[in-house]
Image (tube, rainbow, N blue to C red; front, side, top):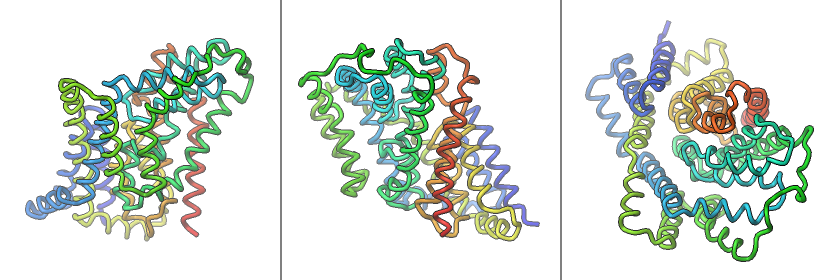
Length: 405
């Protein structure tokens, strides 16, 4: 009996356990070394695999994308543009439901760690005069913040997915956008569909925005929207699109030398670098050691079936880590070689399963902080989160069956 699958599952479990104690990047690097040891790679072959991963154009593209995303994020925070965006949107919108959806979505356009805590007070204020329960307020704030992560080119997870699969980002968006649409619909039904009162615009305390507020809003969102348009509608390379967006924002914000130095210092994240390198090293070594081919052969002859594997592995890694880029980096290197054909539809299912784990994770920072703000136990949130994530995952499953035709 070939033990390749057992070895990989053991290594996978070690990485997940280590990720609860140390940084994920460090856990992945340890896992990479374990792959080399378990599969008896010679030191020369192991080093060659690592060096090949380092000079791979996809690795350089991924590192550049993540660095630019972090610069964009830090510039918006340092310049105060994020706060301006939020305040102008409050003055522009005057419908409770629309504003409740829009503000967390706006904050969620950028990968702010624990960003749901930033929009929580706003959602609380907007829904103050309604009969919405604290649990539903948490769900609205948390869920709507993450509905765009399936397609948002500013998020490392989806960027890494496009890079690792070799599928054009725009092609992935065309399939994944159904996950976003269904997430918005199911979230709206859960929050506003039953027993809701006082949702009309007359009960909202928000004022209509004037022309100045519209200008502020458009100026603030322009770099983000421009990146979306360049990547999705014009097919411009994401790195180039990010460079253009970042340059525009920096020219407009005119940060001082000290502020710019602070932005660059925070963006040059050693933790993120370690995580990305851990992902690509793990992928290359796992591929070069020959384990994937042996596992593929075993699964094809065992009758276990591919569907349970590609559903469970990303879900578990997302659940344990609470990070999108983590489930992408952990599961895709193992799953991609098992697919007879890599299509945007089966990747859609893998992403839906992995992100379901992320959304349900008790270590997801956004969920923990939002529950802390509203003083509600995380356990009480699963009555809304479970049916919502199941619905979105079922949408991904439909995509998977489409890929089989």
